[in-house]
Length: 626
Image (cartoon, rainbow, N blue to C red; front, top):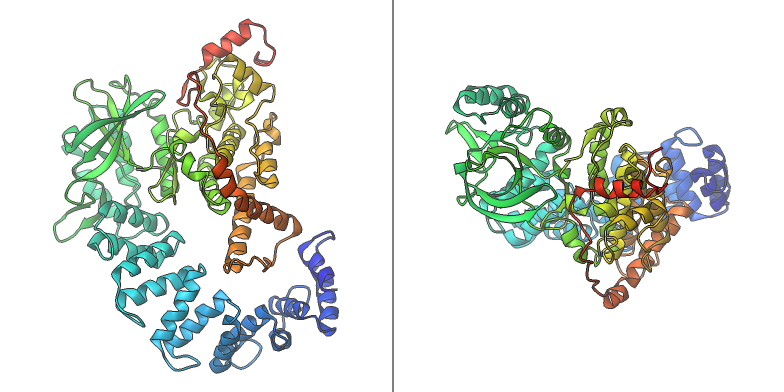
């Protein structure tokens, strides 16, 4: 009967019907089923399938708790703590939290720690509070991580230890705890528990600013910038206008741009070569602005005495930039404003005095491109791979919701942070508004890109759409399962482009979860209309992440006997496929062999029009435009 109630509640095998779910939970509860008692209490508490009734919710929580139901014990304690359905009683709340922590319940550990810390329901005991914060933190509770870090930082309940305080602030910050992020910034700024690193302090400061405007007055800053307009010029009206508008409208420290004199850059060295530009690494002596110093009446800059590492991207043949040439960077800038943490930071422009080419100045990602990190990523658990893939999707979502497409989406245009925790999209060089792409259906356009990542319709010279970006994402998905770039053993030529149009895709890697393969195949479907949207991908990856994270959390002791509650059968099957794949991971790594790339395998963007023209002249129907 309880299972029948679950089917009705979740819409599994039967149409979702909360009234019928309530009916069957009630029947099962009256027959002594403790799972049903807890489920019935939840429906009473939330007013789902019946009228809201906190007293009855309390009654059934109590019945289930007295029969040993773990979740009901915790819920009963919450009722006593908050006075829901019964009189508030902190001593009884504390008693029931103590009962459930024996079974490893993270929420109960945290609440028990709060009781000891505040002296609520028991005598104040900072040592025991620290102990239970530590237990909850080790189980993944980000607030407990923050409180544990405070314990180490202040010497509350344990010996003062700034190194351990820093470590737990860092863990909590990576779990998006805003208070921990603020304290992490302070640690990096002052060198507390770690080496002083203003570059990392600046990064985490920007993470705060992404969601909350702090230490920034738009009107005041705009006035200060405007007063300095006469002190600089790029000698190009379009660049000047772009920078000035960004400075006047900036709502925080990562929304404005600067004209950076070339003599403020030192140690300029060749770093890499892109498809259409040369990349250099340099030290920006001043470093980026992050706030206004009222005492000194000047901008605070992040340079930690020796300067700030940046990347210089030279715009070839750009001495006479026009507005259209700047479109890429306007699109990029607007996306960066919407989500700082998904795009490598664009600081502004300078100009090479020798050839007068304009140069883009951007933040330096020490790990380099995603392609350079594939050999590391293949060793990650699927839980970590899926989190990275979701971050890529969230960046692509910003682009698509801006009514843009990327146009050149591949692993060389995604950069990795030094802790493998963040991914940044770069190079929107082929990025255009969707309306412009639709208007260009009948125009003869040059085709650029990296062949293995290009959708069949692009090779057929059809207009680029968001679905074309989704195809490119599917190839990145494949790389996460293989650890190598696609089609690296064969030439990227006419024959490969034909084969892609005829349905050729990278070979599926053994032990890849079936649900992952199915999604990947949908994303690389030859028909763009069959590919999932960016929102669909976000939802799927979010659910997979949630389920796998919860699975490892409840089975942290390594026994893997606890089930994840509140998921349907399909999600359960998907979750177990990823868990099974993780178990096979060690054996896979032992058998992995390095495949030497073919000499004609190209992974930088290039002009492909000539290849497609060859195809047309040979009368190959696959490529000829309709």
